[in-house]
Image 1 (cartoon, each protein chain N blue to C red):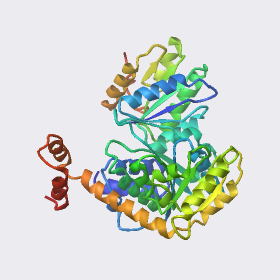
Image 2 (image 1 turned 30 degrees about the vertical axis):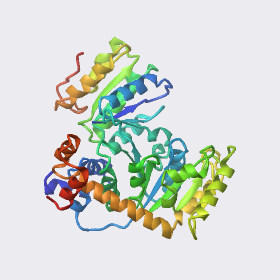
Image 3 (image 1 turned 45 degrees about the vertical axis):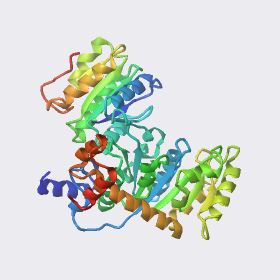
Length: 297
Length: 142
């Protein structure tokens, strides 16, 4: 896209054209432009990742979160990340099924929802996601929520793009060791145990608190709530509104972001496919390939 | 290709829509499924915000003659003339010409193979007269 039409699209998106905003985000997603191409202005904004295992209630909680902000006349955008099929490269993006707030005629103008597939090159999605957040900030969406499935390394990396990370857990999730295995506990600034109306939620919250207390001082709060019944929901929303970053999580997040940047450079290297082929046929060792890429050769 | 699959109106039968969504995913597309009982305005807003190139509408309630053309008109009103609209469900043959006239490029009934839907998407994405706002009235012939 030439500079003039890009500038026109950007201006229209800033003036509130949702269509131009959507197309701008596609340009970023498809790698045609990067956030840096859109000018040097650094727009102020916050981003919060909501992550956790599948089926734990992230979308239902996010629906409440979007509604709460929109009702205060605060624009809020959601980037809902779902995995692409490794086989076909396609994706089924179903987060909207559980969202009712974007369909509310009064609130719709203050809520923007975009479904994002991780695509085949999962190594580059976190950096794309970071750019999408910047573009949204620059187009009048100061708060961006990122929803990711907390299963797998690339999803953890997606969460690390955000300024704050909220981990959602639920009852019957096994012991707290299961949550630690996913690598998300050390990243979390806040832990919400959803489905508190069901048996086992309180016990799981207690286990998580015990586990987090071992990590050192200032563990993140663990709050019980139910997106279904509304139990503990006002407290959870308030906690998000005033959420501070935890010292320990900043370091963990920085580590993931560094890995994001390295992996993005790797998968975008012009010889990436050729290097993969050489590693596959045994003519190049992965360690030597990294040397080649790092030196820019 | 980004494709929105939607169920407009008061119709709780979404097995067909889900099968089509799965088939399109397996053909390598990114499919955004809206869930049940969406209004035409909500569906058009979703297509706009998701920057979808295709919109698949499913109806088994008999209200397609009203809902589908309303959605096509709203898409044009939003300036989304390049979005390709197709439909499926229980749509009598006699109702199809009016839907084609409204800008829909294909209507798939029961028994349609998932391959046929993929072939339609491939063909429509290679044409520049397949959008809901395009002149010429091209329609898919299986």
